[in-house]
Amino acid sequence: MWRSALVVLQLVVLGLPLWAQDDVTATAFAPQDCTLDCVRQGAPGCEYCRITGADIKEALGFNSIQEFGSCIPWPCLELLGEEDPEICQHYVQAPNDVTVESVQEPNPTSETILVSWKPSYYGIAFLRGFQVTLQALGGSTVACQLFLFHRNVSLVATHAQRVYRSDPFPGLSVGSQYAVTVMALPVPEEWERFYSSKIFSTRSCEEKNGLEQCKNDWYPTYVEVQQEGTAITVTFNLAPQNLGITSYFSLCYANGMQNYTEITPNSSKNKTHHSYQLNDLQEGTNYTCEIAANEVDAVRKAFNVQVMHIHKEGPRTHFVTASLALILPLGLAVVAIIAVLLAALTRRKPELQMEKRDIKPDITKQYHDSGSQEEMVSLPRSRLTPPRLLICYSSFDGPAHVKAVMQLGAFIQQHMATQVCLDLWDSLSMAEEGSMAWHCRQIRESDFVLVICSQGFNHRFEPSGLESDDEEANRRLNFGSNSFSSNAAIQLMVEEVCRAKARGQDLSKYMAAIFEYSEETDIPTELRLVSQYRLMSDLPLLFSHLHGVALHRPGGYLKINNISEGSFAKLPAGAALQWAIHEAGLAIGGKIHTSVEEGE
Image 1 (cartoon, rainbow, N blue to C red):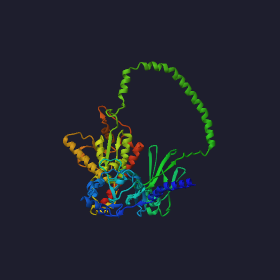
Image 2: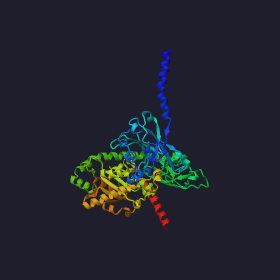
Image 3: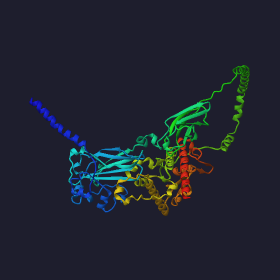
């Protein structure tokens, strides 16, 4: 009996830590409103406090974010170490279980998230707080939140099951990628495992509000194709009227051919569906088609169209039978004549061979030399790897121009034996290094730098003026593109060009180019010192520059397959590039027209 009681007692004792742990994990700690003086004094109401930009500015004497341009680890000695310097000299391990959750946001075009995490067991007794950093992938704007424990708090191992939360991060763009980093404080000078990072994506507009409420994400969900004779009819569902979509387009392509159709439905006849005709399609061909709203970066719905052969039968079959009866004897006579001719040619073949032997070889050589000759030219083998090309651009001209730059990079990398570096393809490294540091490293490591000049180069970055109110600036997010950092990188490259020119050094590393919708005046004055190209007419010259091969020589020229203004569009990547340049030209032309009207 006493043994059973002893077993029950042991189970109860062993279960107590588990129950305590469950109580700890059930608690989520949210930040408190308290001052930095309260944290320093260790008052009871300052267990887990949010520290604003105004508090840091008061302690340091300047705005750290405005001075340094990004979030840096908080200066422990300035905030907490004046009374006890030893409090800032201990290592703390990175937090665990970093999670991101969405919070209810009434604005349909933005998202609000909340970050939570657990502290690590290692060094938890010396933990003084956390710093949370949020950055848009591919962007340069950073948002920071700082949370501190008061100086008398000392956590134990069981507190590693606690869940700590940040303040909400509002104003995030829907359908975008961000990187969140949670650092354990204090941060020592040499330590690698003091933070945990997590890449996450906000909900798309369709996931948050539904497809019928998202203009950029909407696409036709119902597409029906019918063929009657040579007529191809396509029926699709129209966008809801609240989205304001009034026009659509259809694009069909097969075997290098494209068929573009603009669609403008009459909503007064049918508000839910519309039918249109596909013309000039070849019989017996399978087409891949796309239909979408005529909006920038609209989602496209793909469907297939198989154009069937039209079989035409004669009305009088008895006439065909009579014709065959007449043609059959005639065919037999023709076959007999051909057999006689073949026999005669066979007998004369030895005589022709004897005459052929009498032809002088000098005459044959002269005949072949008179024609044009093709030769195979190999690329220089001085390098074991393809040349590395960095493409810089300005995104102030809008997403259509950025898309054209991205398609150009894809074409150069696929069909011009070149390794392309583009910030759009390396957003994770940009989030880790920072946009400016990433561009500086790429300029240093690349063999060539190509600047796509456009009207956006005339745009000057203007501060938003939010620094006047430090507390508001500390809580507000404004995630933009990396336009400011890209222009700063281009300015850095311009200085390198001027410095190399002054020293008499080689400038072949740097190039400037414009698309067909830009003007030569869009090229900055400093970049006119380097080679300039107009794309896509100068595409062979760009290939010659990258690989160091001459296009012309005495008596001939070098022809490169699929790399010319007339042939690059035959490739899928070239067709996509041509279409992106066309869309960018339409978009930028519309902006110019609008700006002129506003000026008048």
